Amino acid sequence: MIKLKGNIFKIISIGIAIITIGCQSETEKERARISLTREGPAPGMRVEDPRQPYAGIQYNSVVILDKSLQDMSYNNKKFLFWQTKEEDKRNVGKIAIESTNSRRTPTGTLEVWAVIRNRTNYPLQIEGRTTYFDKDKVPCEEPTAWQRLFLQPNSVNTYKELSIKINEVNYYYIEIREGK
Amino acid sequence: MKNFLYLICLLSFCFGGCDSKIRVENTRGQPTLMEDPQTTGAVAGVGVESQDIISITDKMMRDILATSAITQHPEPPRVVIDSSYFRNESSSVINKNLFTDRLRIELNRAAAGKMVFLARHQSGMTENEYKLEQEEVVTEGTQGETKQALGYDYRLGGRIASLDMVDPKKGTMSRYHQITFELIERGSGVIVWSNIYELKKSAQDDIIYR
Image (cartoon, rainbow over all chains, first blue to last red; front, side, top):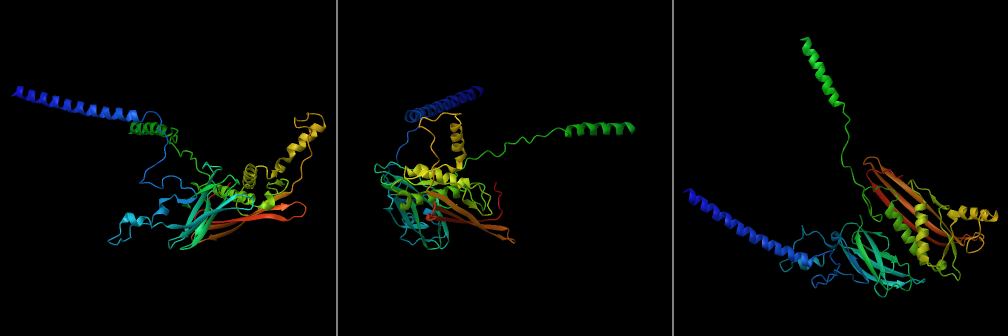
């Protein structure tokens, strides 16, 4: 009886050892694979994914940075049977960019503007800043300071900004965030 | 009984001695925070703050550069931007040089020769050097003899004004700031450029500005 117990113990021990060795070898393989792909600092890279078409810089456009401005609350929203949440997301931002464009001032600096509409029944505060790029899409001056804009319920207001440099400014990129 | 009382006294001295140890508040404390000066920080009130100064001076600088009366002279105009005529008439405690220094430096960097800036805020520096040169204490620089200080064409004037309101029931304080900037032509006194910036803030408890 004692001998049988001893054998069972040996069998169980050998089994555990085999399983453990197997696991270790798999883990080591995984580690080796990661170390091959991730040795040293990670290189910076652009996101080029068809599922994320707006991940990069869209020149001469306005982008909304804060999720709180991009989406309204879904808690109380009821969807009709043919609507899906994902489809409706495209049309639920708190603010709408009605138009954006640029023009030269008499001194040659570039004036950009964005007409912004508050789609909610509440007053909103937003901040905007602009980055200017030259013809090679190289940033030619530092981003402007954040300028605050007050939007009354359902009203329209205009964000305007001027460049410092004159003829070398060709593109602009306006960023909007929530005023805090 | 007497011995028992002695024992109690002795023990109380011992424990008293233990209590008299110096206790150090050995806690980690709040670490220093680096904050973005362009964003409202952890300490904010109803006064003018860093994000306001940056936003205001940036707006004024860009507006001056877009004014053809100033930047499209045949000869670059000489401009003085200092706090001598930029008055603080508000209830906010603020160093006026925060506005004028940032505006002058940003304009000087951006103007790229379209305007020339005179250092009237450092006028003592050139005057002292001129005196030393006249007394032959120092030699002239590599650029030749020290020239006479230049006169200006335009000088900055302006005002910081405020209007305070307090709700004693709620303890809420509100302050409206009106900050004006003007570039005034020498001699004629014509205002060739002006702009205004307004901000209104309210808070439950006002913080102390220094």
